[in-house]
Amino acid sequence: MITSVLVANRGEIACRVFRTCGELGIRTVAVYSDADENALHTRVADEAVRLPGAAPADTYLRGDLIVKAALSAGADAVHPGYGFLSENAGFARAVLDAGLVWIGPPPEAIEAMASKTRAKKLMGLEPLETVTAADLPVLVKAAAGGGGRGMRVVRELDALGAELSAARAEALSAFGDGEVFVEPYVEGGRHVEVQILADAHGTVWALGTRDCSLQRRHQKVVEEAPAPGLGDLTETLYDLSVRAARAVDYVGAGTVEFLVADGKAHFLEMNTRLQVEHPVTEAVFGVDLVALQIQVAEGAALANDPPRARGHAIEARLYAEDPARSWAPQTGTLHRLAVPEGVRLDTGYTDGDPIGVHYDPMLAKAIAYAPTRAEALRKLSGALERADIHGPATNRDLLVRSLRHPEFAEARMDTGFYERHLAALTTSVPDPYAPLAAALADARGDARSRFGGWRNLPSQPQVKRYDLAGTEHEVRYQHTRAGLTADGVRVVHADARLVVLEVDGVRRKFEVTRYGDQVFVNATALTALPRFPDPTAQQAPGSLLAPMPGTVVRVAEGLATGAAVRAGEPLLWLEAMKMEHKISAPTAGTLTALHATPGQQVEVGTLLAVVETTPVSTAPR
Image (cartoon, rainbow, N blue to C red; front, side, top):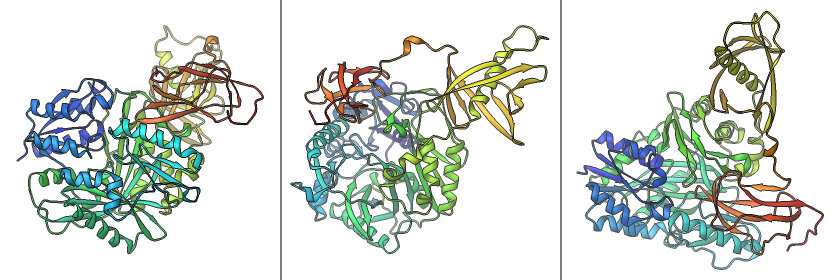
């Protein structure tokens, strides 16, 4: 029997595994980098062992240090979670060689399937060795790992070399393996997968399908079980998935992924680990996949047949990112994260935790279960809309709008959903009364700090300014004997936390929370602005500022001060939260300053370069 489990991972998945271990009476051990010293997963574990450093290559990708940590803490088993070393056969062997139980598939099965190139050959498929214009578009893909990292769609042959280099660098940083390959890119398809669970006695379960078609940067955003509208294709997917598992004598939890287009299933890969989206399968089948992983690792046999599926479940990934700005990751303090009761929230954060730059920007997964798909959709979108999410910008509004989009509601989505609809889904429609509610709440807070009562003389209108979705809003209100007044709106109630306004005969309630200059009015985020702007805060026109903290990984070849640049031309690349982010020229002109150098660490707002707008030739440099 397993008595103590070390999770060779961090964040949400570590917390999720620890939760099941606690229910089973199993002691838990966390590992943590210096950046994660006070992270939630280190606090909820029974014990924690430090991995010196912050970068994944120095910490969570160091299998030798993790095995040493397990032995020093007296753990007798290792669960790899997902990402990092979860599909690394060498790490699995090191765990087993140390006399520990590996809660995962045999190293040989990982070896056969974890490399997507070997997996395709096993299934009778081959990657493209040479690429011609006739093959376009193609997909550059990392051979190891997942999560959309090391993946690029290439539509122009001239761009292939640069995208291969970028994919290799990103894959090496995320997985410690820079191998990439090229395959045809199937457009208009749905991403569908089958959950597999196998024991060491020859039983293989196909635990239903999941649809994961809503993706950004080839990383899943919304997932659901079962995948809707597959019809007779479901049994074909089951058969192919079970065949793949049996082909490598698979043991444990795994996922076989397909691209479904024109009624046909195209094999993508087999992930030899637990998936981020496993909770939707758990909800529909009424199982705990982590508990089953542990039982299988202990040698237990599965029942001959899996449990029956009931109902529908949908999961949405909440990211600290701005979808309207090329999915730019956000950092800062997560002041509050809470969803209404009845919705499962898997997270690696709690109120007051910092969101740093070193790891993936996913904050949490919200999962709703209901008897029907329509009910699950309504439940999840409503819960996300009402959730308290106070801190850096997130994709919450995008998720709500995506779940309510007719194409998704009618199950007509495919992997190109965001390419078609992102602009409309990120068009901000802020609540016009949010600034007024914030100002009235601030006014009540100010009033409590006053000495004495109201004056007999009429007061002058008070003015407060707020930034709302990038637009400045000025609010005017007055203190009178009757209370606070604002033009055109009846103030029913106002205190520092709650404002009730009557607009056209309808009363509306606004809950107001303030953290320094950040103000949250219901789900709307505002920034309180000073009464008199700081004149020194202005930047020269054409200044390129770092949109996030990160590392300058490279500068465009041959780029130097005085060079002519085209509008949209990539100038440099930042790496933040395990993804590369391109910084491009905002306009055609001349590069008059270049402050960024490869390897440089930058903070938000760091001046990287300046492009002065001048008439220039549109010919490439």
